[in-house]
Image 1 (cartoon, rainbow, N blue to C red):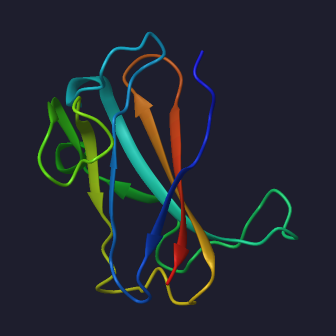
Image 2 (image 1 turned 135 degrees about the vertical axis):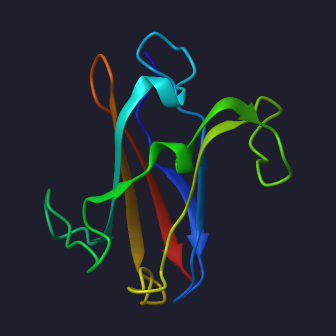
Length: 132
C-alpha cells in the first residue's frame, strides 16, 4: 500500500493554479472516465491550530467537477507534467473568475479532491500549496 501524502507546490496570490495527478484505483489500475461517478474539490486554509476542520475558502467548498473535464482515459505526457515520464490522467485548472482562492501571501492552502468511483471506495488526494 502506498503512503498517503500531500502533493506540495506554490501558487501566486489571486491567481489560478492547475493541479495534475496520476490517479489509480485500489488495485493500482489507472482511473478512466468510465470508472468515475463524481469528482468534487474543496480549498481550505491550513492553520496548525484549527484542528481537523480547516476553514474553507468561500466559493471553493465541495464544488462538483465534470469527470469529462478533469479525468483522461489515457495518460498525458505533455510539458506540463514534470514528475516522471509516465504521465497524468487528472487535470483541473481552478476557476477563480467568481471567487479568489489564494488571497493571502504566506498562507498554506489545501486543495482536496474526492473522486467517487462507480465501484469501490472513494479516492482522496490533496495538494498543499503556499501562496507567494
